[in-house]
Length: 333
Ligand code: NAD
Ligand code: UDP
Image (cartoon, rainbow, N blue to C red):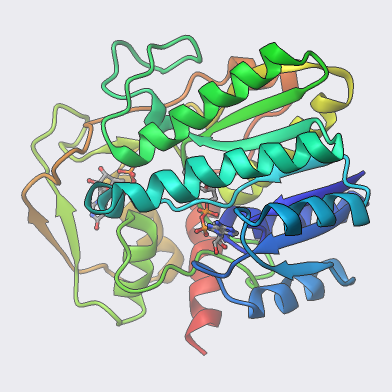
């Protein structure tokens, strides 16, 4: 199939591009490089052994997106392009609504005009909010606790209304849990700008000597070892989940929200221990206050993805850490 990846040079988009190209799909990428680098395109082309048509541009540019859809006879769009910092979204909400919600609406308009009606959207487990029960299934009430999560929920709702208005649409909202890890080649991975907010990239920078120690945000939660527990998923499993969702859109119409996680929660200390094995060194750490807005624990119910997409995560925590470390060592050069 001819597929457009918005935000395709970002962390999840680049790994998905590698998987889809490996399956023989024609992948076209648009990215404004606000949180990625052009050199990722070269790495991706080394992995795939072929060139990708790339447009440096913004999904809010209706004319550009429409012409890409038409010129490449795009059949399905995977919409990764978005801003993802929870903290920044609270400080600058309009930037987040403009980019994440406004960008998605412009994309939908362009797709409608070009008669492209298959869309896979990058949503997030943050749409659920405080757990009423765990694991979160897709029927769990939706009540995001921050602006970022509200942008994701709003786009999901707009997409649902769009599919109600026109039954030709096939829309899958993938609710990601915590993607970490990197491509097995070590050529692409997660490259956050500045000091990372998330646990895995922070650990990578501590181990590579760029940051002095890891702050463990709270060890007094009601969890197995007192630290926060999350459903970490290998980014290559996540990428393969997109390939499965793409296959699903061939024969199914309507709107679906589907969790992509492993169903297994791991604590901060679990991740530290696994990473210490990968890097064969101790990670200096200091226990700090809980981070405001953090939930103690959440993880996915994964049956819907198994049933509808015939997909489940296969890679374990050690492989997630090994691949992150391999990428980090290369990124240092
Ligand atoms: P990322 O920042 O690495 O990738 C997003 C890409 O989109 C970047 O390359 C950025 O330059 C591009 N982009 C942003 N706004 C754009 C715009 N208006 N026009 C064109 N390009 C634009 O993030 P990621 O981790 O790969 O996440 C991809 C998507 O998945 C995002 O929508 C994010 O909100 C969502 N998501 C991520 C996580 C996570 O933990 N990484 C979890 C849940 C959901
Ligand atoms: N965390 C931590 N130190 C850090 C970053 C994160 O202890 O420097 C903890 C955080 O409190 C949470 C877990 O690691 O329990 C995962 O945090 P992350 O930001 O990676 O994901 P999210 O909270 O968005 O699910």
